[in-house]
Structures are given as structure tokens and as C-alpha cells.
Amino acid sequence: MATFQRHRAFPWLLLLPQLAIVAIFFFWPAFQALRRSFYVQDAFGLGERFVGLSNYVAVLTSALWQQALVNTLLFSASVALGAMSIALLLATLADRVLRGAKGYRTLLIWPYAVAPAAAGVLWLFLFDPSLGIISRALGSLGIHWNQRLNGGQAMLLVIIASVWQQMSYNFIFFLAGLQSIPASLLESAAIDGAGPWRRFWTITFPLLSPTTFFLLVMNTIYAFFETFGTIDTTTGGGPNNATTTLVYKIYQDGIVGLDLGGSSAQSVILMVLVGLLTLIQFRYVERRVQYY
Amino acid sequence: MRYRRPGLDVATHVILIIGALIFMLPVLLALMASTHTLPSLLSGGLALLPGSEGLDHYIQLLTQPAGGVAVPTWRLMLNSLIMALGIAVGKLTISIIAAYAIVFFRFRFRMLCFWLIFVTLMLPVEVRIVPTYGVVADLGLLNSYPGLILPLIASATATFLFRQFFLTLPPELLEAARLDGAGPWRFFRDILLPLSKTNMAALFVIMFIYGWNQYLWPLLAASDADYATLVMSLRRLTIAQDGVPPWQLATTMTVLALLPPVAVIVLMQRWFVKGLVDSEK
Image (cartoon, rainbow over all chains, first blue to last red):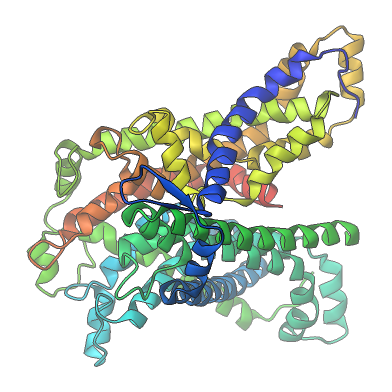
């Protein structure tokens, strides 16, 4: 790429706003999280004491943190599996349709625009123990639904609301992936006598694998972070911490409980987890660039 | 070209229509419930059709405070709009000029700058929420629009996308502009900006929706009702009074909260899909 070379100050002027915002609102807080994770604050926030790794030890050995970890893994695996399989089914069908594919796309992608918190309220209404349409239907089948008392049901509610919201995101990517598969491949397979089922599993699905892997990472990140609103509006992490995820616990301990050292250590652990995820994703992106 | 079976085509349409209906159901039911009174919702009949209240709850919420929310909903919507526009416009502006500097100029520490910005791709604001709150409080920006907006534009997604786009432009473009005597500012304004229009529209849609839908950050940064946003206030109406939350109002507010971003997506679908697929690659 040709470049301007004689202008010394101008590029810095252009970069200044972004660098300043990133420095103040990204690097400074991230550094503080790292620093605080090695200290213990006294009750009045006046003094602090260096404690080495003991915040980390306390977090990693805490039964509540371990439960939050298990909740997060269970939650994100369920959301990824549910949202991706429904999206793949619907995208495959929409890809088959010759007329009206655009219309179906419009009908299926708008939940992406609904705030996670709003999605939580919508589903909370449907499952309201006294007047929700679904809880009533379940009641007439003899299933007593109350997510305020039953931890498993609370988790299920959060999963359903998140799957509903995240499906549209996956649908967009699967449809784009399906439309980029060369028709000639599927045609020649059809001429060789492969039925739709066989064509899907031997040609379409393997060719979609980069998209699938990318979506797996994105769904995990979504379930880890963006579902805070869904959880807070539906269950508030309860009952009995049954729906407390790692991010929800950082908020509870740091903002509600004012345990700065402990919540900072949790933040750092989470940053490392996400960093690893992103790293995996970039390695895969590189590989994809080589093959295509 | 495809080798289809007519029966399969019918089944395809049927499943797609059922799927679309299931996905619409929660919003349709909320829309219906918002036109009923609470006793009518409680009385057992499923609120599948519009009720007796019409748009009364919408007018009530938009004009008066309700539940635990101290300001009328029009005020919440205004704050949400300011926050969403601020995030979309702010992020686009700082990103496009930063990407321009990184791609079209040679200077010391250029790659260092790129990496400093690039690292921010990895960590959403939720992870560093507690220290970010501290920084914004120290700067005296709690309960202000800059405080709501700035921490959420400290990420590199848009810079990265513009950089990728600029790298695909032919180098002759810059050489021709320079031969014609255009300086860096003219080149940016007369050539680069017009070429980036589609990318800007796409990113604008994504960022607007991202900004409008924020929950945790405004919840912390806007404790003062004058700066509260619509999405962060939803929860206040789902708190039970006498055993049942005021669902007729909670559903009304939820419909108001989801209508603007859904309208943006449906109306600007082409740019939205492009923006999403491009920016996440």
C-alpha cells in the first residue's frame, strides 16, 4: 500500500482520540483489575495490603465460584448446542427455498435486535407461575413450574430465552455459509444418486465446518458475557445461585458485595479464559485463509 | 439445478413457517398482553387477542412515571437514543480516522499502535466492569452521557473492519490523488469517505443496536433517573406487587424497548447482514 510519508504529526492526530479512549477506559481498568487482584482492601476502603496470590487461591477453592463455573459451562454448552442446531435446520431449509428465501430471512433474524434483558422479560412473562401461558400449559400436564423455587427450571428458562435470541445470529451465518457452497458440488452428488440427507451430511455439513467452529466460539462468548441482562431480569442468579454465571458473580461480589480483591481476581481469571478462546479462534481464521 | 421432490418442498415451507411463528410468539403474546388489564390477564383466559385497553398503557407509560421508574418512558427512550447514537457515531468517527492513520501513513510505532488497539477486541466491558466503574467515578462522569458512552466505544471492532477494507483498495488510488496534488485531508474526505459509505452504514446499524441494548453498564453508570435508559429499567416493572408483577405495564415497556432496534434491522436488513458477516470474520 502506498502511503503518505512526509506528514509526521498528522497520523498521531488521527490516532489520538481512539488511543486516548482505549488507554483510559480499557487499559487503565484492565491494569487496575490485575493490580487489585493481588491486594486486600480494608473495610473502609482506606488501606490495602499486598497478599500475593491468595485472592486467586480463595476464588479457585471457593465452592460458590466452582458452582458458577459449572453453571457457566452447562449454560453455554446448552445455548450453543440449542441455538446452533435450530439455526442450522432452519437455514438449510431456507437455502432450499427458491422463492421467498428473503422473506423467511426477515422473519427469522429480527430477534437479534431484541436486547438480552428484553428477551428475558418476554420469556419470564410466558413462564410466570400465576399467569404465564407456558407455565399454565405445563400445569395442566401435571408439571408444577416455578422458576423462583426450582433451580433446574430457572436454568432452563435462561437457556430458552438465550437460545431464542442467539438463534437469529447463527441463522444469518449459516445461511451465508450455505449460499457460498458451489451448486455444482451438490448437483454432481445428486447425479451420482445421493439423496438430500446424504448430500447434507457428506457435502454441506463438512463444508460448513469453518462457520460451525466460528459460531461455536461466538456462542460461547455470547453465553459468557452478553446474557447478563437475561439472567438479571429473569432469575437474578437464583434460586440458591443456580443461575449465577462467572460474569454474574463478578458483578455480585464486586458491585453488590464490595469485595474488590476477590472480584478482580475473578475478572483476571475470566480474561485469561476469553483470551484463550480468542486465540483459538484466530488460529482457525488463519487456517481458513490458507485453504480458501 | 436442484433435484427436488415436490413433497419435500411443501414440508420445507411448513417447517419454516412454523419456525417463524414460534420465534414471533413471545413478542406477539407480549403485544396482546399490553392491551389487557391485569385482572383480565389473571382471570385465566389466554390473552391471544387484543384486549379492552387498546393503546392506553402505552400512553400511560410514555407520559407518567410507573412502578419503580421515576421518569416517564419517553425520557428513558430519549436517553437510550442519545446513548445509542453517541456510541454509533462516536465509534465510527474515532475508528475510521484511526484506521486511516494505520493504513495510509508510515510513522514510528505504527505497529505498536495497531496492536494496542487490536488487543481490545478480546475483552468485553463486562469483564472489567468493576474497575471501569471506578475510573468513570474518579473522572466524575457517572450520571452523564459521556460516562454512558465512552467506556463502550473503547474497543477495536470497527477500526479492524475499516483497516481490512482500506487494505483492499488499489494503491493507484493514493498515487493518482497525490499526482493531482491532494493532501492527506483531501484524500480522506473526497476519496476514502465516499468509498466507505456502505461499510459505515453497516457498522452504524450494528453499533446502534449494540448501544440501545446495553444493560449492565447503564445500570451502574446511571443511578440518577434522569440518565436511566429504557432497557436497564425493564426489570423494575417485573418486580411483584401483591404477588404478581404489573405484567400489563411490563409487557408494554418491553414492546417499546424492542420496537426501535427491530425496526432498524428490518428496514436496513441489507446493511445489517453485511455489517454482521463482515465485522465478525
